[in-house]
Structure formats: structure tokens, C-alpha cells
Amino acid sequence: MSTAKAEPVDMEATAQAPEGKSRRGFLRAAFGVLTAAIAAAVGGPILTAFFSPARRRTVQSGGSASFGPLDKLPIGKPQRHDVMGSGTDAWDRSDVAAIGAVWLVRRDATHVDAYSATCPHLGCPVGFDPGPNRFTCPCHESSFALADGSCLGGPAPRGLDPLPVDVKDGEVFVTYQKFIQGIASRRPA
Image (cartoon, helix red, strand yellow):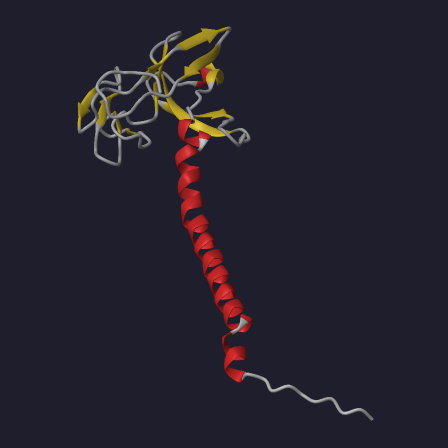
């Protein structure tokens, strides 16, 4: 058997050598990865929201739609109807759903008025109060005349938004449109 002579090992040099550097390197790399992950988790959604095409989304109106036969509308009694449509934005197309509502008021044998059921103040849904015979907004207590949709009181800057109505062959068609809220002038959204 051959006996090999072992060389003495310098323990101090071994303790300061590559093992110490690799530990520090690992900790630096781990800290860097952790910092990058936190920055991405916090900053990613912020940047996405800022540059997102959804921020430039425009509300699409439903166009002209039938709201049924004229003879189903009682004279002088408002009826609320949902406006159905589908929406599209930067990434999504939605199925047919309610995109708004209208109030229909039949005035006589052939004339029908239509109003948006959205309050021109801040967009709350407008209801009808049969007691005082007026349209009302439950959010901020604006009220509107049954006769012409004009504002009777409250913070609404204008009356209800009228919508074009066409009666063809005994059928009521309304062209639905959304309007900018909170301003005195009536401008399409």
C-alpha cells in the first residue's frame, strides 16, 4: 500500500474563498429577483391601466329599436322599457344585455314621447311617482315634469333627455342615445 502524504489545509483561506462569494452572490440575486417581482406586481397593473385601450372606450348607443305596438301603451301613463344591446370595448364583446332604459309616454292616438331613464345629473335611474305625477331621481331628489320632461327641482342641470320616436305601421320605434351627464347643455356621450 502506498501512503500518500496529505498536505496541510489552510482553514482560514478556505473560509474566505468561493463559498462566501457564492452565498453573497446568491443572496444578491435572490434579493434582485424579489425586488423585480414586487415591482412587476405593483407597477404592472398601474402601467396597464394607464396605457390600456379600455381607457379610451366609448359608450355605444343602441340605435333604433322597436318597443312594441302603439295600442299597448296607455294614453298619459308612462311605461319604462329596457334598451337591449351588446357592447364592445378594447378587449371584450358582451352578449345582449340591458344598456339603458327609456320612458315612453303616449300623448294621444298617434303621438308618443320618449325620454332617457338616466338622470342628467349623475346618471342614476329615473323612476316615476304616480302620486305627484312626475319623474323622480331617488339619488339626489331631482324631479321632472310628466308633460315635457323639464326639471322641476333638485340638482339636475337640465330636464330629461328626449329621444327620437317614430311610429310605423302601429309599432313604436325609439332611437336610443346616451348623453353626457352633469352639464346644462345636451350633448351625446
